[in-house]
Image: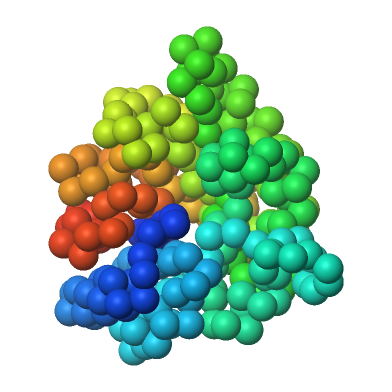
Length: 252
C-alpha cells in the first residue's frame, strides 16, 4: 500500500512575527526548490502567526495547520478557536490530542474525539496524537495505552482522507531519546491493526501514521524507511529551516 508521505512541523508556542515569517519563507523556498510531488509538507505555527505564515508560504505547496481547536463552531468560549475559524483562515489541517494538551490541559479521549469530529465536519484534516509515558512504557503498557487512545479519540467520521494518526511516545518528545527502529515499527504495525478494528481494514491500510518524538536529520532516514511509518510530526527540528529541509529530503 502506497501512502503519501507527510512531514508536519509543530512549532508549538514558538515564534514572534518576524521570525515566524522568515521560518515559513525558508521552509517554503526549500520545498519549492525540490519540486517534489510525492510528499506533503505542513507547518503548524501558533494561532498568532497563521495569517502571516499563510501569506509567506503562498505558491510553495506547503500546507497550513493549527495546533488545536474547540469542538464548537462559535459561542461563549473565551480564548478558544473553532474549526470553522481555522478553515476560514485557510488552514487545511489541525492537530488534536497532543500529549502536551492531554497532560497540561487534562484533555480526555472523549474531548479529543469531539474536537476531531468537529474539525472534520468543518472541512479540515486532523492529526490525532497518541503515545505512552515513560512509566507506561516501562510497565509494558505501550500497546494498551495506544489502543485506548485510538478507540476513544478517533471519531466515527474519520477516514483515511481526513485523518492522520501521529504516534509520539511522550518520553521521547523533546528529550533527544528515541525508541529503536524495531520498537517504532512494532508500535506502528500494532496501531494499524487497532485502526482496522476501529475504521475497517481498507481505511486502516490507507490511513497515514506519523512518527513524532525527537525525529531529526540524523535519524529521519532510518525512521521514515520503516514500512508503517508514513511521515513525521516534527517539533524542535521544524524550527530550523536546514533541519526541517533535511528531514523532508530524508523522506525520499
